[in-house]
Length: 315
Ligand code: NAD
Ligand code: SER
Image (cartoon, rainbow, N blue to C red; front, side):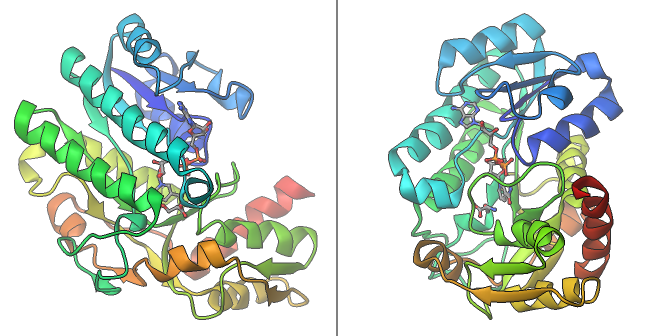
């Protein structure tokens, strides 16, 4: 079974490729991105294709050439960048997904597409946000994410295409820096704590958001794609979360490891506005019931691991 990862050079892709190649074999996992330089060593350990998801023919060539049967479609523009460049975000997030779905229909592939906490908006219940609830996002990113969820469900209902997805919270990782999202502060803070013992946070105190450590994010995607479809009542997309905290909580946790670490705040109004429209904590019981979702990392365990890994990486 040949697997394609689009957007493979990004924060999630650069680690998903390693997990999938370990499980399915290096030559069975084909990576692609518009960026052939980032994470070159990881991606080009196996087959890599330079391909733009907004270009139907380029993606078609890759799927044909490698006889792809499963697609992890990660190529996207994240929330902060999407607010600065909404036209680009619409083109990549919507037309890119449309091309993937059309090609998956033609070549009988199954498709994993990550949605996000960004698919919710200010009229959504913000605490214990239900799986099925009001979705009226106000960011461009959110508009593309909720439309993407609906489009994937439509292809499942209309064509029987095996589409599955997760509403990821902010993902925290130590291999690749995040690509311009609202939750990026929760990654940056570790690098700054270790390198400069000082961090200026762009979200204000008390801004609770759902988060997850990368090993859980990878496990969730692979586990969902391997689940017997007869167990799935929902498809696009499952709420999944591992922890919910505000900037002062992650600061306090890091300070236990680095006692002279300090933090102040300089609020970015654009990203603060986005964060204020997102859930404070999601209810992920549908994922737990339908395919056994169970995260391994809480804030404390993640912080210990992040600091251990980054101390080695950054020294
Ligand atoms: P990222 O920004 O780190 O990586 C995205 C990758 O897509 C980049 O390598 C970029 O070069 C590539 N890309 C951009 N435009 C492209 C195009 N036209 N064709 C092909 N590739 C293109 O993003 P990520 O954090 O790895 O996110 C992956 C997916 O997960 C996205 O759909 C994102 O919305 C979703 N998600 C991420 C998070 C998170 O916290 N990282 C949270 C929720 C959802
Ligand atoms: N981490 C992502 C972002 O902030 C959430 O989808 O854009």
